[in-house]
Structure formats: structure tokens, C-alpha cells
Length: 356
Image (cartoon, rainbow, N blue to C red; front, side):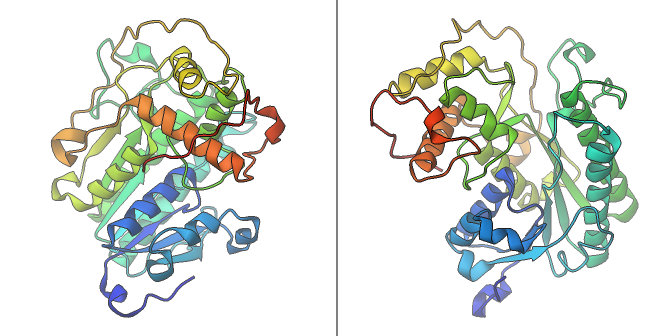
């Protein structure tokens, strides 16, 4: 941890749960880059620093002066009371994103999501936190395309996902819906200001080197010359999702609102493979055929531009920036959970820049 020195001590404190996660690290980075906040990040174990997992957090600009790391566990009662003390805002991002190998949905997904959210927000209430922003999902808005003929927006709630489903992604959607419902219940009961961010599948350049994770595994498949296990899907840029969290805390009118962050339609994996093959001809990216036109507008946010003033990046930028950053990390020795030899290079060229 760090001790906030001098004038830094006067800055508002923002707590980010699950700070070593893919999205949370981007949020922490943007908060530090703004120069306006002290940041306290919760992690399950500070001992993981020796595994390099925390290393990117320590090297972020402003981290030495304005970043503190503390341990907290979503499964331990009272674990967050000390973590949120003196905070102005709490960003709750920690939640299991598991869609495969689920043998007990309640234990693996539902309870950690619902109980963890409730624990963090009740601790925020006791600490007198001004506003909480939770990372929800489009899964809380929609469970199936069949639920509505038109585009889904922030007024919609998932009505089709059930705990009896044998579809891992559907169970994840249910966990996000129930966790967000619990959050709004606590907000109504306590008066805690709350905003929810509802992104679709998050992609974009990682700030940290992770060996696992659905988003990085998705891009890794393309870079290894395989088709990803996830098919066509709406996507959200990690930088936009992080920015939405910060704006949802700062903008007065964001309290009590949900913010859908997503491309309007499903992005074809065939389009992604074409983009990558054109941008990185030195990689053997698998040709997945001619991309079909996107036929349906699935999502249309009513709030993201109107309230937050946030305009989303083109998905092409998200794809190419993510691939560029992952290839840079690969060349620096990061393995993303797979041997580097699985990346089939045609020559020794390597991308050199990515913009956050």
C-alpha cells in the first residue's frame, strides 16, 4: 500500500473493487491519469504481487502518490468495511465472469455476485459514501433476443434467464440481473446514490498482463489462427466502459440511472478476422469467410450520450488496439496462458503503438 502524501491527501478517495481485473485496471488507470482522485483498490491477496499480477497497477502513472492496495474478499462478511472508509465514490467491479465448467450455478455465480454486491454497498452505506457505481451487464437487460422485437435499452430487464438453464452464458446473465436488482433495492432502502453500467462483451487493449480471462482468450484465439469459442457478439470498448464509470460518479444527473455501453448490433467474427489479417499480415489469422451484414439493432442506449455525453469508439478501433497491445505484451514475454510458439508469425514484424 501507499500513504497519500501532502496535498494528495485532500483529493477525493475512490474505491475500486477487484482492482486487478481487466476492466478495473483500466478504471484505476483513468482515475489516476485524471489527477483528481486518490484511488484505493481492493484485491483478494496482496501476496499475488509476486506473481506479477499487481505489477501493472504499481507502474501506472500516479500510482506511487495516489494508489493504495488493500485486501478484501467478496465471500467474507465485513471484509469491505475498512476498504470503503472515507471514500467519496465506490466502483464495484468485482464479480465472477464464468461461463464454462459450471456445476453449481448458485455457489459459483449467483451467491458471489449477489452477496458480494450487497456486502460492498452496505459497507458503502455505513461509511457514508456519496455514490456507488456498479458494473452490471447487458445480461441484466436482456436474456434472449426473443424478449423484444425492437432494440433493448436501459428500461428493459432480462425476463428469460433462469437458474435451471444449462447454458453458462445465460447463468452469468442471471447472476448480473440478480446482483443489479439487489443493488437497486439497497439504494432505495438506504438513500445511497447509485448508477449501473451495463456493457456488452468487453474488448480493447489490456492495461495489465493477465494469463486468463474471457476477453483476452477471445482475442488470443484470433491471433493463434483459430476461431474464438464465442460467436458473433455486440461489444464494448474497455476504455469507454471505464470512462462511463467515472462519468456516472461525476455527473449529478447520473444518479439513479443505468447506462448501456455497446455496439448496436452483433459484430461478426468474420469481420474481426478480416480486420486482423489486413492489419497484421505477418500473422496467420484464420479466414472465417465473408462477413454477413448486421441485420438487427439489438441495443440502443437512451442515457449514455444524453446524460454522460459519452460517444463510443468504433469497434474496429477496439479490435485493432487490443490485438496490437496483446502482441506487444507477447513480444515482451507475456504468455496469456499459452506458449508463444502457438502464435504463427510469417516474419518478424511487430506492431509498435496503441492509443489509450
